Image (cartoon, rainbow, N blue to C red; front, top):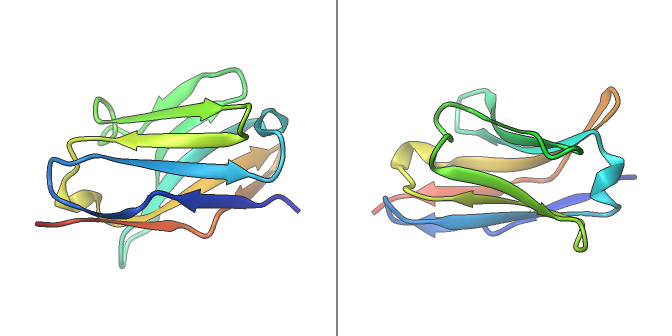
Length: 115
């Protein structure tokens, strides 16, 4: 069973930065794509950023220019570097891994942007 473990969330002031990590239980190149999603209270889960096995990235409009997805295959880890954070970025951030038609999810990590 694939396991994804997120870390790096927390409380940060507006304008600050955080780096989220997602450690996978197997080689991340086994997956067609990995990514980050977020869900704020009372809202649907939204795409933040994805990266295919070939390295192609895709970002939500709100993430462009502020967030960067990257990976370290030696650590089987995907990262989300977030900068210029705003209160509206407050949400639970989830790591995902897609293998053919199946998507695996982590347990999520809370990011709170507040002064």
